[in-house]
Image 1 (tube, rainbow, N blue to C red):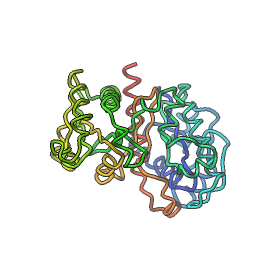
Image 2: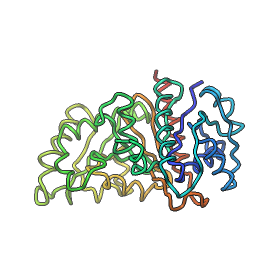
Image 3: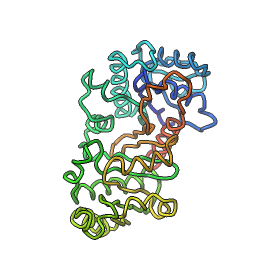
Image 4: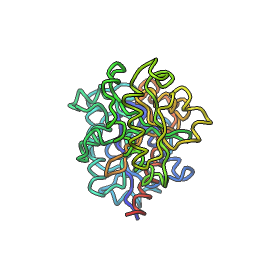
Amino acid sequence: MRPPLAVSLGDPAGIGPEIIVESWARRRETGLAPFFVVGGAGVLEAAADLLGIDSPIVRIGDSRGAIEAFDRGLPVLGAEDCTYRPGEPDEEGAALALGSLAEATRMALLGKASGVVTAPVAKSQLAKVGFEFPGQTEFLAIACGVPEDAAVMMLAGPSLRAVPVTVHCALADVPGLLDTDVIASKARVVAQALKTDFGIAEPRLAICGLNPHAGEGGKFGSEERDIIEPAVELLRAEGLAATGPHPADALFTSRARQTYDAALAMYHDQALVPLKALDFDEGVNVTLGLPIVRTSPDHGTAFDIAGKGIADPGAMIAALRMAGEIAARRAAHG
Protein backbone atom coordinates (compact mmCIF):
# COMPACT_ATOMS: atom_id res chain seq x y z
CA MET A 1 0.00 0.00 0.00
CA ARG A 2 1.34 3.42 -0.97
CA PRO A 3 1.95 5.99 1.77
CA PRO A 4 -0.77 8.63 2.14
CA LEU A 5 -0.52 12.07 0.61
CA ALA A 6 0.73 14.94 2.78
CA VAL A 7 -1.29 18.17 2.66
CA SER A 8 0.21 21.47 3.77
CA LEU A 9 -2.26 23.71 5.57
CA GLY A 10 -1.69 26.89 3.58
CA ASP A 11 -2.41 30.23 5.23
CA PRO A 12 -4.87 29.44 8.03
CA ALA A 13 -6.64 32.78 7.51
CA GLY A 14 -7.48 31.84 3.93
CA ILE A 15 -9.87 29.30 2.49
CA GLY A 16 -7.35 26.46 2.80
CA PRO A 17 -8.71 24.99 6.05
CA GLU A 18 -12.31 24.88 4.82
CA ILE A 19 -11.56 23.37 1.41
CA ILE A 20 -9.37 20.75 3.10
CA VAL A 21 -12.07 19.65 5.55
CA GLU A 22 -14.69 19.76 2.79
CA SER A 23 -12.47 17.60 0.57
CA TRP A 24 -12.19 15.00 3.32
CA ALA A 25 -15.98 15.09 3.82
CA ARG A 26 -16.40 14.32 0.09
CA ARG A 27 -13.63 11.71 -0.05
CA ARG A 28 -15.85 8.77 -0.94
CA GLU A 29 -17.92 10.40 -3.66
CA THR A 30 -14.79 11.87 -5.26
CA GLY A 31 -12.60 8.75 -4.86
CA LEU A 32 -9.73 10.41 -3.01
CA ALA A 33 -6.68 8.49 -1.86
CA PRO A 34 -5.88 8.73 1.87
CA PHE A 35 -4.19 11.96 2.95
CA PHE A 36 -3.16 13.73 6.13
CA VAL A 37 -2.62 17.39 6.98
CA VAL A 38 0.58 18.65 8.58
CA GLY A 39 -0.24 20.85 11.58
CA GLY A 40 -3.22 23.05 12.32
CA ALA A 41 -5.51 20.51 14.02
CA GLY A 42 -7.24 23.25 16.00
CA VAL A 43 -7.59 25.47 12.92
CA LEU A 44 -9.16 22.64 10.92
CA GLU A 45 -11.50 21.71 13.75
CA ALA A 46 -12.62 25.33 14.15
CA ALA A 47 -13.16 25.69 10.39
CA ALA A 48 -15.29 22.55 10.28
CA ASP A 49 -17.34 23.73 13.28
CA LEU A 50 -17.84 27.24 11.90
CA LEU A 51 -19.05 25.97 8.55
CA GLY A 52 -21.01 23.00 9.84
CA ILE A 53 -18.89 20.48 7.92
CA ASP A 54 -18.92 16.94 9.31
CA SER A 55 -15.15 16.41 9.42
CA PRO A 56 -13.87 15.10 12.76
CA ILE A 57 -10.15 15.58 13.34
CA VAL A 58 -7.99 12.56 14.20
CA ARG A 59 -4.54 13.39 15.56
CA ILE A 60 -1.93 10.87 14.41
CA GLY A 61 1.61 10.18 15.60
CA ASP A 62 3.12 9.26 12.23
CA SER A 63 2.10 9.21 8.59
CA ARG A 64 1.29 5.49 8.65
CA GLY A 65 -1.54 6.21 11.05
CA ALA A 66 -3.34 8.18 8.34
CA ILE A 67 -4.32 5.05 6.42
CA GLU A 68 -6.24 3.52 9.32
CA ALA A 69 -7.64 6.84 10.54
CA PHE A 70 -8.82 8.16 7.17
CA ASP A 71 -12.29 6.64 7.30
CA ARG A 72 -12.88 7.91 10.85
CA GLY A 73 -11.78 11.48 10.43
CA LEU A 74 -9.32 13.88 8.86
CA PRO A 75 -5.83 12.80 10.01
CA VAL A 76 -3.56 15.59 11.26
CA LEU A 77 0.12 15.11 12.07
CA GLY A 78 2.01 17.43 14.40
CA ALA A 79 1.15 19.72 17.29
CA GLU A 80 1.84 23.06 15.55
CA ASP A 81 -1.26 25.25 15.58
CA CYS A 82 -2.60 28.79 15.85
CA THR A 83 -5.85 30.65 16.43
CA TYR A 84 -8.32 30.40 13.56
CA ARG A 85 -9.07 33.91 12.29
CA PRO A 86 -10.53 33.62 8.79
CA GLY A 87 -9.86 36.67 6.69
CA GLU A 88 -7.31 38.08 9.16
CA PRO A 89 -3.82 36.99 8.08
CA ASP A 90 -0.98 37.50 10.54
CA GLU A 91 2.59 36.36 11.15
CA GLU A 92 1.52 33.55 13.49
CA GLY A 93 -0.50 32.02 10.70
CA ALA A 94 2.23 32.57 8.14
CA ALA A 95 4.73 30.77 10.38
CA LEU A 96 2.34 27.83 10.68
CA ALA A 97 1.87 27.76 6.89
CA LEU A 98 5.62 27.76 6.28
CA GLY A 99 6.28 25.05 8.87
CA SER A 100 3.52 22.90 7.40
CA LEU A 101 4.91 23.27 3.88
CA ALA A 102 8.45 22.41 4.97
CA GLU A 103 7.38 19.34 6.95
CA ALA A 104 5.03 18.04 4.24
CA THR A 105 7.89 18.31 1.74
CA ARG A 106 10.26 16.52 4.11
CA MET A 107 7.77 13.68 4.57
CA ALA A 108 7.56 13.19 0.81
CA LEU A 109 11.33 13.26 0.39
CA LEU A 110 11.66 10.60 3.09
CA GLY A 111 9.07 8.40 1.38
CA LYS A 112 6.63 8.77 4.27
CA ALA A 113 4.15 10.50 1.96
CA SER A 114 3.46 9.60 -1.65
CA GLY A 115 3.19 13.25 -2.63
CA VAL A 116 2.54 16.79 -1.42
CA VAL A 117 -0.63 18.80 -1.99
CA THR A 118 -0.16 22.43 -1.00
CA ALA A 119 -3.04 24.64 0.08
CA PRO A 120 -2.87 28.33 -0.94
CA VAL A 121 -0.45 30.71 0.76
CA ALA A 122 0.01 34.48 0.67
CA LYS A 123 3.55 35.23 -0.49
CA SER A 124 3.45 38.67 1.13
CA GLN A 125 2.66 37.09 4.49
CA LEU A 126 5.31 34.37 4.13
CA ALA A 127 7.92 37.04 3.37
CA LYS A 128 7.31 38.46 6.85
CA VAL A 129 8.53 35.19 8.41
CA GLY A 130 11.62 34.78 6.27
CA PHE A 131 10.30 33.09 3.10
CA GLU A 132 12.62 34.24 0.31
CA PHE A 133 11.18 32.39 -2.68
CA PRO A 134 8.88 33.72 -5.43
CA GLY A 135 6.42 30.93 -4.63
CA GLN A 136 5.94 27.40 -3.33
CA THR A 137 7.15 25.89 -6.62
CA GLU A 138 10.59 27.46 -6.23
CA PHE A 139 10.75 26.43 -2.57
CA LEU A 140 9.99 22.83 -3.47
CA ALA A 141 12.62 22.80 -6.22
CA ILE A 142 15.37 23.91 -3.84
CA ALA A 143 14.15 21.54 -1.11
CA CYS A 144 14.35 18.67 -3.61
CA GLY A 145 17.83 19.65 -4.81
CA VAL A 146 16.53 20.57 -8.27
CA PRO A 147 17.61 23.79 -10.04
CA GLU A 148 14.76 26.29 -9.99
CA ASP A 149 14.66 26.42 -13.79
CA ALA A 150 14.27 22.62 -13.98
CA ALA A 151 11.03 22.65 -11.98
CA VAL A 152 8.22 23.43 -14.38
CA MET A 153 4.79 24.77 -13.43
CA MET A 154 1.91 23.22 -15.33
CA LEU A 155 -1.72 24.24 -14.89
CA ALA A 156 -4.00 21.31 -15.62
CA GLY A 157 -7.76 21.01 -15.84
CA PRO A 158 -10.31 18.86 -17.64
CA SER A 159 -10.12 21.10 -20.73
CA LEU A 160 -6.50 22.23 -20.92
CA ARG A 161 -2.91 21.73 -19.76
CA ALA A 162 -0.85 24.90 -20.02
CA VAL A 163 2.75 25.72 -19.06
CA PRO A 164 4.10 29.28 -18.69
CA VAL A 165 7.74 29.37 -19.85
CA THR A 166 8.32 32.53 -17.78
CA VAL A 167 6.35 32.77 -14.57
CA HIS A 168 6.52 35.41 -11.85
CA CYS A 169 8.10 38.37 -13.56
CA ALA A 170 7.08 41.70 -15.03
CA LEU A 171 5.62 41.51 -18.53
CA ALA A 172 8.27 43.97 -19.71
CA ASP A 173 10.98 41.48 -18.71
CA VAL A 174 9.56 38.52 -20.64
CA PRO A 175 11.30 39.04 -24.03
CA GLY A 176 14.69 39.25 -22.35
CA LEU A 177 14.08 36.06 -20.37
CA LEU A 178 13.15 33.97 -23.39
CA ASP A 179 15.72 32.03 -25.35
CA THR A 180 15.71 28.89 -27.45
CA ASP A 181 17.36 26.70 -24.81
CA VAL A 182 14.92 27.79 -22.08
CA ILE A 183 11.90 26.93 -24.21
CA ALA A 184 13.36 23.61 -25.36
CA SER A 185 14.44 22.52 -21.88
CA LYS A 186 11.03 23.22 -20.38
CA ALA A 187 9.34 21.43 -23.27
CA ARG A 188 11.47 18.34 -22.63
CA VAL A 189 10.44 18.31 -18.96
CA VAL A 190 6.79 18.64 -19.96
CA ALA A 191 6.99 15.85 -22.53
CA GLN A 192 8.64 13.46 -20.07
CA ALA A 193 6.09 14.24 -17.36
CA LEU A 194 3.18 13.71 -19.74
CA LYS A 195 4.58 10.24 -20.36
CA THR A 196 5.42 9.19 -16.79
CA ASP A 197 2.85 11.09 -14.75
CA PHE A 198 -0.11 11.34 -17.13
CA GLY A 199 0.25 8.12 -19.12
CA ILE A 200 0.46 9.80 -22.55
CA ALA A 201 2.77 7.64 -24.66
CA GLU A 202 3.42 10.18 -27.44
CA PRO A 203 2.74 13.65 -26.06
CA ARG A 204 1.91 16.50 -28.44
CA LEU A 205 3.16 19.97 -27.53
CA ALA A 206 1.88 23.25 -28.94
CA ILE A 207 4.22 26.22 -28.55
CA CYS A 208 2.69 29.72 -28.35
CA GLY A 209 4.12 32.74 -30.01
CA LEU A 210 4.90 35.80 -27.93
CA ASN A 211 3.50 38.55 -30.13
CA PRO A 212 0.09 39.15 -31.72
CA HIS A 213 -0.49 36.78 -34.65
CA ALA A 214 2.74 34.99 -33.64
CA GLY A 215 4.69 37.97 -34.97
CA GLU A 216 2.99 38.13 -38.38
CA GLY A 217 6.21 37.19 -40.16
CA GLY A 218 8.25 39.73 -38.21
CA LYS A 219 5.84 42.62 -38.60
CA PHE A 220 4.88 42.57 -34.89
CA GLY A 221 8.13 41.29 -33.40
CA SER A 222 11.11 39.06 -34.09
CA GLU A 223 10.99 36.67 -31.12
CA GLU A 224 9.09 34.02 -33.04
CA ARG A 225 11.65 33.97 -35.86
CA ASP A 226 14.76 34.31 -33.71
CA ILE A 227 13.89 32.33 -30.57
CA ILE A 228 10.69 30.29 -30.69
CA GLU A 229 10.87 28.75 -34.16
CA PRO A 230 14.42 27.43 -33.55
CA ALA A 231 13.21 25.85 -30.29
CA VAL A 232 10.37 24.09 -32.10
CA GLU A 233 12.78 22.87 -34.80
CA LEU A 234 15.19 21.59 -32.15
CA LEU A 235 12.43 19.67 -30.36
CA ARG A 236 11.18 18.16 -33.61
CA ALA A 237 14.73 17.08 -34.50
CA GLU A 238 14.80 15.23 -31.16
CA GLY A 239 11.66 13.33 -32.12
CA LEU A 240 9.12 15.29 -30.08
CA ALA A 241 5.73 16.13 -31.56
CA ALA A 242 6.06 19.90 -31.19
CA THR A 243 4.31 22.51 -33.29
CA GLY A 244 4.34 26.29 -33.42
CA PRO A 245 4.78 29.09 -32.81
CA HIS A 246 1.00 29.43 -32.75
CA PRO A 247 -0.98 32.66 -32.36
CA ALA A 248 -2.16 32.53 -28.75
CA ASP A 249 -5.55 34.02 -29.56
CA ALA A 250 -6.49 30.90 -31.56
CA LEU A 251 -4.65 28.16 -29.68
CA PHE A 252 -7.17 27.73 -26.86
CA THR A 253 -10.36 27.28 -28.86
CA SER A 254 -12.24 24.03 -28.42
CA ARG A 255 -11.16 22.74 -31.83
CA ALA A 256 -7.50 23.69 -31.38
CA ARG A 257 -7.29 22.05 -27.94
CA GLN A 258 -7.98 18.68 -29.56
CA THR A 259 -4.66 18.86 -31.43
CA TYR A 260 -2.26 18.91 -28.46
CA ASP A 261 -1.77 17.50 -24.96
CA ALA A 262 -0.12 20.58 -23.45
CA ALA A 263 0.46 24.17 -24.56
CA LEU A 264 3.63 26.07 -23.70
CA ALA A 265 2.89 29.77 -23.28
CA MET A 266 5.54 32.45 -23.20
CA TYR A 267 4.35 34.25 -20.06
CA HIS A 268 2.19 33.81 -16.97
CA ASP A 269 -1.15 35.24 -18.06
CA GLN A 270 -0.93 33.74 -21.54
CA ALA A 271 -1.21 30.34 -19.83
CA LEU A 272 -3.33 31.10 -16.78
CA VAL A 273 -6.07 33.23 -18.35
CA PRO A 274 -7.41 30.43 -20.60
CA LEU A 275 -6.94 27.79 -17.91
CA LYS A 276 -8.88 29.77 -15.34
CA ALA A 277 -11.54 30.79 -17.84
CA LEU A 278 -12.12 27.15 -18.76
CA ASP A 279 -11.42 25.24 -15.55
CA PHE A 280 -11.27 27.64 -12.60
CA ASP A 281 -12.99 25.35 -10.09
CA GLU A 282 -11.05 22.28 -11.23
CA GLY A 283 -7.69 23.77 -12.13
CA VAL A 284 -4.60 22.16 -10.63
CA ASN A 285 -1.07 23.54 -10.37
CA VAL A 286 1.28 20.57 -10.76
CA THR A 287 5.06 20.88 -10.50
CA LEU A 288 6.89 18.84 -13.14
CA GLY A 289 10.53 17.78 -12.94
CA LEU A 290 10.64 17.02 -9.19
CA PRO A 291 11.55 13.68 -7.60
CA ILE A 292 8.36 13.97 -5.54
CA VAL A 293 4.75 14.51 -6.55
CA ARG A 294 3.41 18.01 -5.92
CA THR A 295 0.05 19.51 -6.80
CA SER A 296 -1.96 22.49 -5.58
CA PRO A 297 -5.34 24.07 -6.31
CA ASP A 298 -4.87 26.76 -8.92
CA HIS A 299 -6.26 29.65 -6.86
CA GLY A 300 -5.20 31.85 -4.00
CA THR A 301 -6.04 32.30 -0.34
CA ALA A 302 -9.24 34.29 -1.03
CA PHE A 303 -9.08 36.07 2.34
CA ASP A 304 -12.19 38.06 1.39
CA ILE A 305 -14.46 34.98 1.45
CA ALA A 306 -12.64 32.88 4.08
CA GLY A 307 -14.95 31.51 6.76
CA LYS A 308 -18.13 32.42 4.88
CA GLY A 309 -18.90 28.94 3.62
CA ILE A 310 -18.87 29.88 -0.06
CA ALA A 311 -15.42 28.61 -1.08
CA ASP A 312 -15.62 25.87 -3.71
CA PRO A 313 -13.43 22.86 -2.82
CA GLY A 314 -13.40 21.61 -6.42
CA ALA A 315 -9.82 22.62 -7.19
CA MET A 316 -8.52 21.12 -3.93
CA ILE A 317 -10.37 17.87 -4.65
CA ALA A 318 -8.91 17.89 -8.18
CA ALA A 319 -5.40 18.49 -6.78
CA LEU A 320 -5.75 15.62 -4.32
CA ARG A 321 -7.10 13.31 -7.02
CA MET A 322 -4.35 14.23 -9.48
CA ALA A 323 -1.62 13.74 -6.86
CA GLY A 324 -2.99 10.29 -6.07
CA GLU A 325 -3.14 9.33 -9.74
CA ILE A 326 0.40 10.52 -10.44
CA ALA A 327 1.73 8.73 -7.35
CA ALA A 328 0.03 5.53 -8.50
CA ARG A 329 1.54 5.77 -12.00
CA ARG A 330 5.01 6.39 -10.61
CA ALA A 331 4.69 3.46 -8.23
CA ALA A 332 3.50 1.19 -11.03
CA HIS A 333 6.54 2.04 -13.16
CA GLY A 334 9.08 1.78 -10.36
